[in-house]
Image (cartoon, rainbow, N blue to C red; front, side):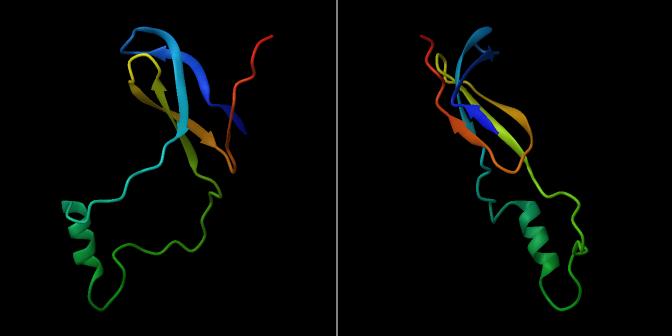
Length: 97
């Protein structure tokens, strides 16, 4: 699916429709010292079974793509939940003649 690199949509900070640059959201690296991560590692170590059962068959073949929209005027960033899609492509907007 082709998604334009610049879209005009509502900005909650400006309280009006402005141009936003579009990029694909990528999550950051997990913190090794976070409580949940420490708890997970502690339960995983040693002999015996895994903490959670390993999934044998997985129903979904795609992940939902999250779009990151950044307002060109104030720099406010908002996320827009995308759709399940195998391939996404950011394209330059067409110039109006």
